[in-house]
Image 1 (cartoon, rainbow, N blue to C red):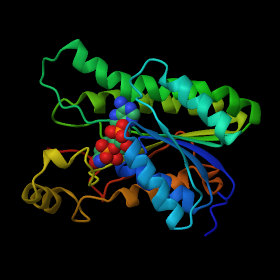
Image 2 (image 1 turned 120 degrees about the vertical axis):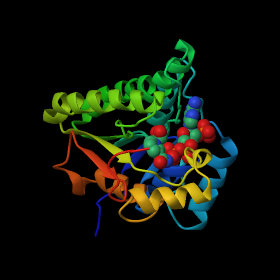
Image 3 (image 1 turned 90 degrees about the vertical axis):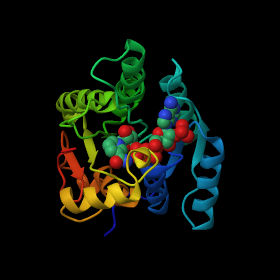
Image 4 (image 1 turned 180 degrees about the vertical axis):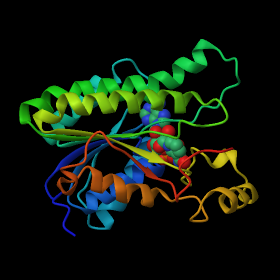
Length: 250
Ligand SMILES: NC(=O)c1ccc[n+]([C@@H]2O[C@H](COP(=O)([O-])OP(=O)(O)OC[C@H]3O[C@@H](n4cnc5c(N)ncnc54)[C@H](OP(=O)(O)O)[C@@H]3O)[C@@H](O)[C@H]2O)c1
């Protein structure tokens, strides 16, 4: 199926590894020129070379820590200069942050900053451009929000969902779509520290109808579809890619 993505342009955060890396790769193979950003410049360079070897469109890479105060402005400005036009924004960067029932403001602020503030700020930096062009596809990675343990990242991502749904209503009439993509348990560095191989197998057998954690490529397939013109009637949605798990019952 042609996703009509050829010659489109995209900004993807958290592009050095895991889900973001898989998304950049699949977009590049679909003919999208991507600005791929994260902190680890070596991994970004390695991704660029991998894409070039496999015949995809070579991405522009940008080393940037999203926690820095002006990160959103820097990324948006660099993208507009390097790509001339931005059609797609994928806010993917984030970090699981399990906390106790009583935690410091600093711990909470870290997640609210990375997982909500920067998502909103980078979107707001690019919104005038999208509004001017009367088109744009925004995809925000979110999370499960019915966890049994407190995780500041999941709380911040619940804010992302609420904000995304309202934003989708506000900007839909201007031709801009805003969606959320909700991973179940996807095998990346973000969650590996929390499961031994044995725990992963037992958890998957018990809780995931499809029997195992997902892969970054499983997420990327849905992400690439949702930002493509093929998904032109999908906005304000939260799409789960979770092997049927839906909730986090642990
Ligand atoms: N994997 C799952 O099961 C799961 C579940 C729920 C939600 N999610 C969400 O899905 C998204 C992708 O997660 P993942 O599993 O692919 O995680 P991952 O493998 O840990 O990758 C996270 C990405 O975010 C980037 N990042 C983290 N902190 C950053 C910072 N301060 N500045 C710039 N970039 C930063 C990392 O790049 P650098 O280290 O190079 O900066 C990396 O490229 C995240 O938003 C995560 O919360 C994942």
